[in-house]
Structures are given as structure tokens and as C-alpha cells.
Image (cartoon, rainbow over all chains, first blue to last red; front, side):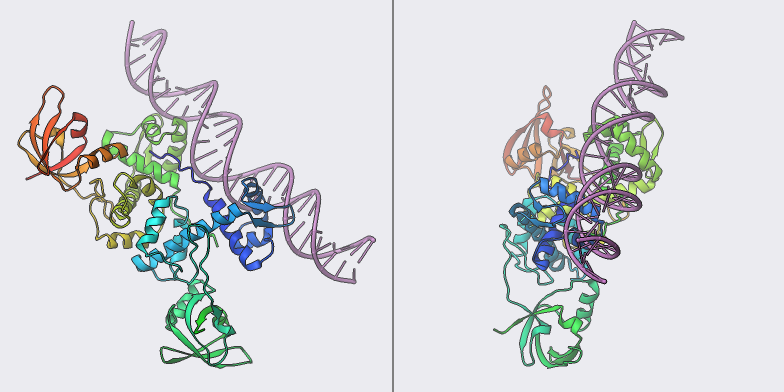
Length: 226
Length: 226
DNA sequence: AAATAAATTTAGATAAGTCTAAAAATAAGA
DNA sequence: TCTTATTTTTAGACTTATCTAAATTTATTT
């Protein structure tokens, strides 16, 4: 009755792959043991153990004391997990009325469900979304991420106009702040003033004037009108 | 990033509770170690280990060599898991075009996802279904199962007319057999003849005549017209 | 370049869940 | 009832994933 699903990889292995994938993107060069440990709230020794295992399975290139990179196989696997995570997030928001600050923990569980048909059908039900509720790209079945030119609000100059297309910080607190001030994906934002001293900005959204700090501006992605 | 979900119980514990719940219903009196081991395709010694643990957690009444019964807490927990399993099955069939013979393995995974909001919203999306795709009752949030008077096709007599409301055997093979012969939940069936010798029957469904063996008739539930 | 600091790995331990093989308890048969 | 068979439990081992503490390697600093 409870025949074990011989999923390719354990939940833990999948979580490591996903983390390494993300770190590799942001840190560019090789990912260190400690970086992984920090990100996953675990101990460096645990990371070392797992890296050995992932290395044996040809998922990472691991050289002692030198950090890791994902192999092609590792990248594909990580992309598949991220794909599942993000499709589930869209589902939760679009079909089950979750707010964008509530989806992460549940998606973290759902991403490990093993069923190709399930994810394909979900994708179809949601009309093949390209971005998740935070504006992050959803890789296709081949592991390729759709590109979208976007810039941080903090990098725009006075007079620029853009549409909000994503957030860098996906923490619940930040998302709730955005909700409170009417900032959401799809909204148009115009930069009215920039304060050099503290990098804060005055912006126009929904014909309302809003002052945002550097912290906000550097976590909000806009797509500028070319 | 990957803070462990401190779900009440592990997947394994939940699977044991669910199995014991089902066995308790069919076997009536206490459930034996071997019955659980058989059902779960595991070894009796593993079952004993788990029973000790479940007993410590007040989920079962366990006396060495005497089998187990679920406590109230155990019943509630089991019902909650079964509730999740069956709601997911409805979702898979209604929203993702799964066939009723494809849902079990996936629901087996999904039933362990820990999110009250998720299951409540799913329930709402599906319009609070009372029965799953095999006609099995979905317990409510209190753990109570909706009742439906139903009888096995094999127990009806010539001339009786009923509507198909469930299956006893939910194996893929049986469900595919039913699909092939146009038998589905909601279909009306009339008993035309019964063969005493081999207990086979001649029935009418969709104005077609069909011969079904004892094996089929004893695994199909009908609701007779009052 | 030697000494110190930081990062990483190893060694050994723990917990959950499972297994095999042996021991103990219960049930069944003569 | 005594003996045998069946069921159940115990004992000890294994795997996965984690941890702490110690050892090792790499990086930094003077």
C-alpha cells in the first residue's frame, strides 16, 4: 500500500541542489561550504557530507576546500525543482487565493512531490505562466529560464517610468509593506525625485505620491518603457 | 531558508495511523501487528517499533501481543490525513484531468503536505465535495464521515435498479475494466438476471446489456432507488 | 615567512526508520 | 495438557541526515 516512491533524489538532496543553484547565480564563482551552510541554516560539516554524496552522484563538481559548482545534470535537476516550486506558487495565488507572502513555505513542501503529470497539468491549468507571484522566472521543461529585462528601482533616474515586474526580497515583511502601500506587480511607477543623501525616492503610483527608502528601492524590479 | 516544518507527525507515523484506521474499520476488532505489516508491505518488527512510538504519543492503545486500536486522538489524526488524501484525489480528477485510476500514488504524497489553509482552500475550490472519485466518503474537519447507504451489486436482486456510487476495489486494473465497459459513478444499472452457479449477472447500463462476473459485482457499490 | 585567523573536513555520536535473526509469548492440534 | 506452529517482540545492525568537537587546510596579517 505504501510502496516507496523511488524518486531520483531525497528532499534533502533536492534542497541542497536548489540552494547551490541560487548561490551560483548570485555569487558567480564557486560556492563555498559556509555559504551553503548559512543559506540552509545548517552546519558546515553537514554540508561537506552532502557535497560528497552529490559529487558521487555526478550532480556537483566538488574539490575539497575549493567549493562546488553544479554539473549540467545538477543544473537540470535544480531547475526542475525551481520550476515546480514556482508553478505551485502561481497555483496557490491564482487558484487558492493565497497572498504572495504566504506561498513560500507551502511551495517548499510541494516542490518535492514527484509526478510529472501533476506538474504538467498544473502548468496547463495556469496557462503556462512564465513568472511566479514575485516576478521570478519559471524555467521551462528543458531548464531554461525566460529572460526579462528589469532594473532595480534604485538604479533608475528621475523621469523614468516603469512597470513593477518583480521583487528581490521575498520576505513576508517586505511583501506586506508593499501590499500596505499599494505596490504590486503590474503597477506603473514614475520616479519623481531622488534624494542623494539617503538614496530615498519620491515616486508616483496610482496617481499617489509615495516616499520610499533606499531599502525598498533596491528590492523592487521595474521594467522600463524601453 | 529550509526551516524544518515541525509537522505534528512524520510521514511514516501518518501512514501507520491511516492504515490502522482502515484496518480497524474492516476487521472490526483490534488490529494485529501482522495485519499492519501485510498492508504496509513492511516487516512485523518494524510495526512493533512504530506501535511503541505511537503508543507513547497517545495515538494508539497498544498492549504487547494484543494488537492495537486507535485512541480518539489517533482517529482524529487519521481522519485528517484521509480527508486530505481524498480532497486531493477530487482535485486531481476535477481540475487536472487525472483518471480515477491514476490518482492514488500522487495523493499518497500530497496527503502529507502540512498547511491548513491549503486544504481548506482546495475544499472550497472543489465546492466541498463529500465523496472522492471512487465514491469513498470525505470526512469533515471534525473527522466525521458522511454516510451514504449503498450496497454491493452482488447483493441486489433481479429487477433492482441503482446508481453506481462507489467501488470497493480501487486498483488500477479494476478501474480500467470499468472504464472499458462504460461503468462510472453516476451511471444507472438494472439487474436483469443472476446466474446462481457462478454468481455472475446480466445488467443493463446505458441501454446496453453487460455480463459481469461475481468478482466485478462484489466490488461495485450501488445506491438503490429508495 | 612565521604566526594567527578563518574556513573546511574528519571523526565519532545521535535520531528516525527500517531490516534480519533469535527469543518469547500466544494459539492450535493431538 | 503437552507439543508444535504461529505470531509478536527483542536485540543488534544498517542507512540517511544531522550534530559537536577536534584536526587540517587555506587565507591573512604582521
